[in-house]
Amino acid sequence: MKYLQFNNGDKIPSLGLGTWKSKPGEVYEAVREAIRIGYTHFDCAHVYGNEEEIGQAFTDAFAAGETSRDKIFVTSKLWNNRHRTEQVKPALELTLKNLQLDYLDLYLIHWPVVLKDDSMYPQTAEDLVSLQTTPLEDTWKGMIAVKETGLTKHIGVSNFSPAKIKKVEGATGVRPEMNQVESHLFHQQNELKTFCDQSGILFTAYSPLGSADRPANRIADNEPRLFDNETIKKIAEEVDASPAQVMLAWAVNRGTSVIPKSVNPERLKQNLAAADIDLSEDQMNELAKVNKDYRYIKGDFWCIEGSDYSLESLWG
Image (cartoon, rainbow, N blue to C red; front, side, top):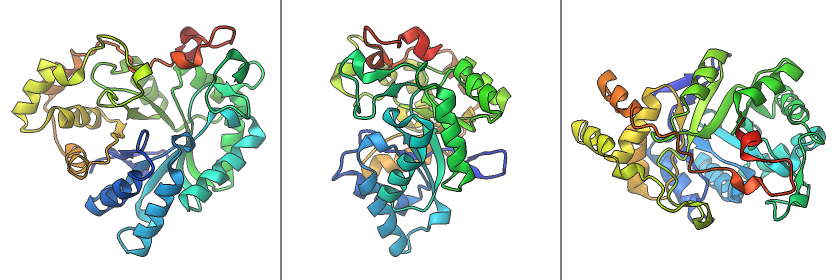
């Protein structure tokens, strides 16, 4: 397994298990099996609705001697309806209770979007709170505080642009340690990755295989399919791997962390094995050319008419 390193020397495995869309009733066995076959990096979030089951899987795996707390790296995320400074610690404490852990390795602001306290997803503009009312800098101050208390070892952001990262750092003097964003061969995020690299910010790729199992209302007609790409298929043959493994190996080989989701035991093994596939410089250059700057998770579900949120402001 390859690793990325934080500034203090802590390491995060380059490939982990994503748990978005892993249903209760399935995610427990997926996590237990992942631990058995060697996964040590688990990516969670309060809004996924499955942290209690994941927590039970951790506890049972510890009890069975399959792993221990110090051998796994666990990430979770602050949901949008808990962005005020004083809300961050209680939100993290609830996540820790659900995961049956004393601390996280990494805690992220899930989106640069604020919801009212009683809203999980916005139905109307009234459910959204302007960033003028609850600035991201206030949320970031809460994140800094929970790191200082030891509830999490590292803090970062998700779905943040360079401008938003600069804003929270400028207001507090504390730079996010990680940015987790959609990244795959059709949306390589080269400018953002360069910014993160130059700033000493680690980079995690979500939806690395295109997230074809996302909700139907978020799938566009005639969207490009990663698995149909001829370059990906050709390189898969060259390295005796599946197209999915090539996509994951590309993410690892370019120096990012990547978190594919699966509850299928065989796929779990294949995904983990992809972290050890070395692609040649020529193959990486070929794969660089397939970029389309195509975003599968567009974020338009936040951009409700009458609110302050637009695609331009979200990603800009």
